[in-house]
Length: 320
Image (cartoon, rainbow, N blue to C red; front, side, top):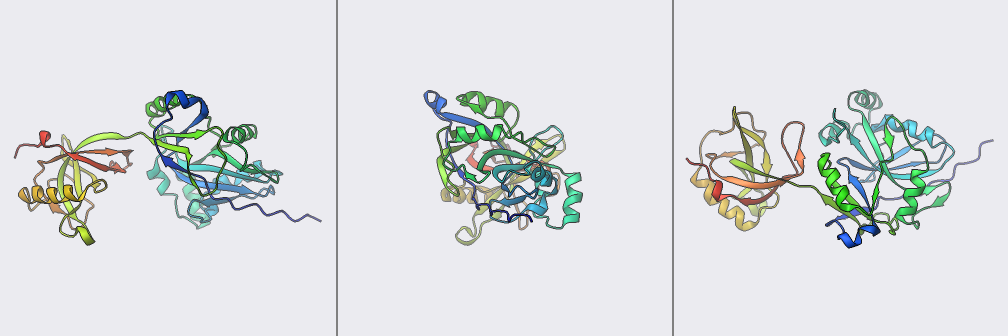
């Protein structure tokens, strides 16, 4: 007669805070990992060959990623709770959040299995919180990584990426060179604190800076009614001004009021963009004003990813 399987603890993921890299004199106390552009996932198995995946929102996403079932078989006999990030990799092996979005939210098993072949995902496992009946929440990051590295968790759809101890600048340069989103710095002596946004885990993002041409705007809502909620940005190409997305984050109230006056002076009836624009209620303007923005990268459709307004560039204003 089979013995009942002991229930595993429900553990919420520990969270990061934005911050700088540790100072050079403090680097020896920290470990450094790649910041993956994906979705967080807590993986648990009672050791019977089954697997459960819980997203950061608390939703069960096991059915969404059927290719990870084999990980449950690899962990058979070892009751385990792991922490990781699910990513979709492009043809160059780089995380592509646009590809991952095509997999998210799919609960139908047949549809999920079909998408798993078309858009395969990979689980980057970077922490362990429970193993064989023993909680590892009170173990240090360094101790947990040692345990994790010794478990032999490699498969077609999962792996344990290496981390770098004591070399933050080297990690920063490597992630920038290879096009990753940034670096996660983790204090080697830190414990795993479920659900807490801890300063012992720092998120340090690479940001790109770009000058874009403003070709229109959309009105804000509520207190921003009548003012630009977002500007419609474009970049010059041989075929004309290509629409690359809208930018609203980072604009102050004063900047919105100033922009309203500037944009009213250069209003026009038709779109200045060479192609279609997916923005309802757009107000078009002559493409004269140039803005400097930051972004974390580009979507597969060629649009800005996480754009943030930085400043207007009057020195780059285009002639009428």
